[in-house]
Image (cartoon, rainbow, N blue to C red):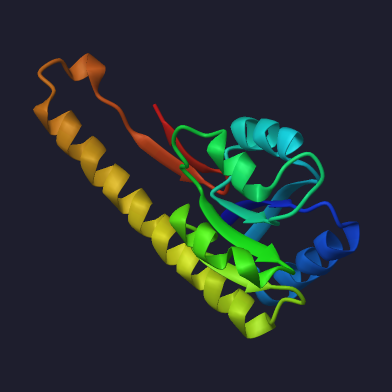
Length: 156
C-alpha cells in the first residue's frame, strides 16, 4: 500500500481524484487532503506520505512554492493540473509525472505504477543500507531493524 495526500484547492477535483484512485488504484490510501500549501507542508511533515498528488496553481502559493519549503523531498510527486505550461518546471523538481485535468484513467494508473516502483526501489535501498550498517556495527546494542506497515517504514 502507498500512502498519499492530495493538495488541490478545487474540492470537485479532489473528490474526482479520490474516486478514481479508489476505483482504479486500490494500492493508494489517501490519508489526507488539503487546499493550500501551508496546510500541505504541515500535513506532509506530520503524516509523512509516500506520494503527493499536487496541483500547480492555488491561492497563497503554487505547488512549486510548496516543494521549495523542503530541504529534502523524500516523497514522490505527481502533478495534477489544468495548466500544461508548467510541465518542464515540474520535472525540474523531479516530479514523477504530470497529468492534465480531467485525469485520464490509464495515465493515472501508469503514474501510480511508476510511483509504486520508485517507492519499492527506495525501500529496498534503505533496507540494504541499514543491513550494511548493522553488519559493520561493533556494538550489538546499536543495531536497528526496519518494520514496514501501510504507513511506511519504521526504524527500531
